[in-house]
Amino acid sequence: MLLPDPVPAASPPAPAPDAIRILNLRKFYGSPLSGARPAVDGLTLSVPRGCFFGFLGPNGAGKTTTIKMLMGLAEPTSGEIEMLGFRMPAERLEIQRRVGLAPDDSLLFDFLKGEEYLEFCGRLYALDRPVARERASELMVLFELDGDRAKLIAEYSKGMRKRLAMAAALIHRPELFLLDEPFEGVDAVGARLMKDLLIEQVRGGATVFLTSHVLEVIERLCDRVAILDRGKLVLEGAMADLRGGSESLEEIFVRLVGHAREAGTLDWLRG
Image: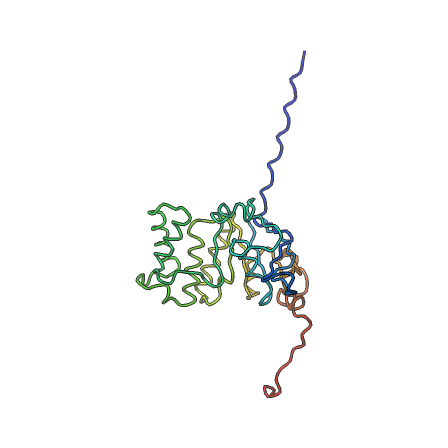
């Protein structure tokens, strides 16, 4: 009696690609031959999917330049960028359809009303007009921007502009958020709302890539952190591992990027 051929075991599904994969990324402003220091210098970094990732560094470290390269707003001098399994710049449109961006300088259209801007963003992401209009209205209420719907964005305070930028980043339910100082200038109530919304998105499988100078916020929210200094990566790891030591995130940050600068004051400020 012939036995049937054994049924081959099903191979396990391939793991999903990282949300962000950066390999040896460099960015010079001007010619590399001029002797200028690169804004981003050989950055290699992986951000897992479903992660709340904090991207830290002092002013001028290269954080905003990195985010601009991730979104295709600045062209790398060299290196590779892959996001959600797609390569930048060859598959830029596929990436941009899946990413929500809230830039530091809030590149908003000042001549539009807030709700008009949100509907416009929804249409850019190929939402049907009725869906874009409905979501824009709901987001205006959620972010407490509906008190004066006739107000132009040019009349918004900085905190209101930040809320609107976050609302625009959410309107198409992206898989990945790139957020550059999203809480700066936002009052405590608005910041709490934004944090809760982002936590909910991560629980649903989205990934958040966040820069902030408020280290307490990073320490509370993030699963993993990376610290950039003078364009170079100086630390990357799980927040749980960092918390396991005796130092706070602030102490680690100052130790790594403080450049041994001695604290001092001016004679006339001494008591």
